Length: 88
Image (cartoon, rainbow, N blue to C red; front, side):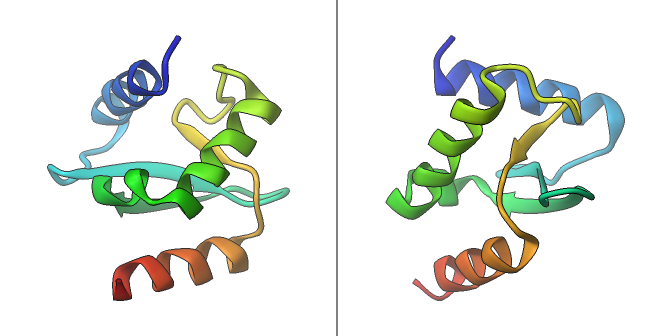
């Protein structure tokens, strides 16, 4: 399964549970308690975000327990990263 297939599957799961604006993706972030974030799809092309995706693949494979894409990092790190990406 490719990353593109994962996102398609994740997007279809998200559409069933809650609406996500077009051009965005819901992800779950956190080390113990998971928090849901809505991010622009453009973040997926950034090398720093792709590193997080590789970590998610290493930890979860293609099975994400939350039903959507789960990112295994602290909420603080994720907020810092997305803040940086929103400024670039």
